[in-house]
Length: 217
Image 1 (tube, one colour):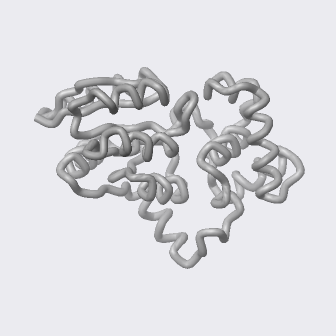
Image 2: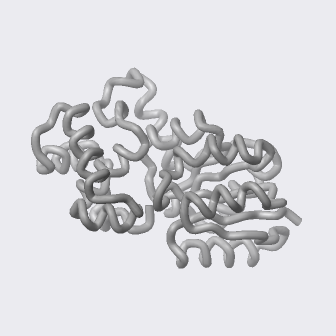
């Protein structure tokens, strides 16, 4: 039996992952977390072998959580489960200490395969993310402006591009509107843009956002 902990900001996602794992057999769900603080608390006490981790967390972004989790519990294997197939997210996740990266658009069979492989000590990358890597092989790490952003700044860019206001973003991420405004300013400066409209055009042109937004990121 493989002990698994689930961390995701959305209750419906946690329930879906729980049901998928339990239905497959061989997995025991030993804990759940819903934000950065509860994920770190869970990592400190869990006897799980595997942690499935969503990226869009209140307080601390999932990419920033990964090294903290590995410091707290070095043996805990991390499988990132997210809607975001952007390869720069995946690259940062692996660099931070994750062992797997799969999108929420995957099939239950692929998710179970990823969970088993990562729990057993292997590495897993979903086909959607692998395609992104392949497309970017000829590019340098700094070729695209959005690749110079921090994990939180990249999330702010994607949420602005998806039509969310600064107030809504602050509420969803558990941050102050002033903090979101500071991130937005940094994003504009790093990318050389003057307006949100320019960010939206950039994100759409490079396929960084989907039409249905980021609620399940």
